[in-house]
Length: 97
Image (cartoon, rainbow, N blue to C red; front, side, top):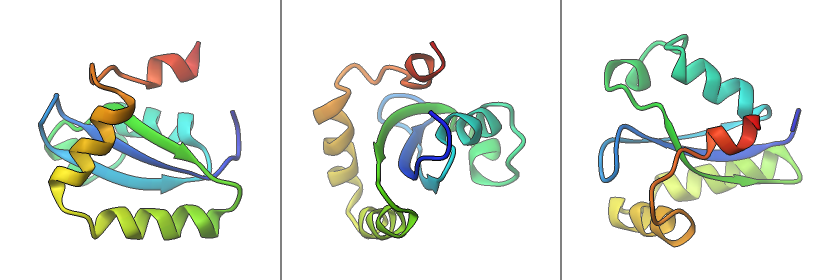
């Protein structure tokens, strides 16, 4: 799963702090967050669990989706996670297997 645009959400714990991002290399980018190589919010608040992601055909569509979701209310983001990942599993582990 290399070079494929994706929008992703990380969480500190179920119902905890959320981080929404966009990348062209999901596995690499989540690994950077998990390894605290990314300075800022995810390091400060230990937001390392991949709880949702969505792949896109183009980076332009991924960026558009990220901007749209960033404008959502928190509850809508939580609903999106619960709809696809009700147990709040760490999806990163599925990606690297």
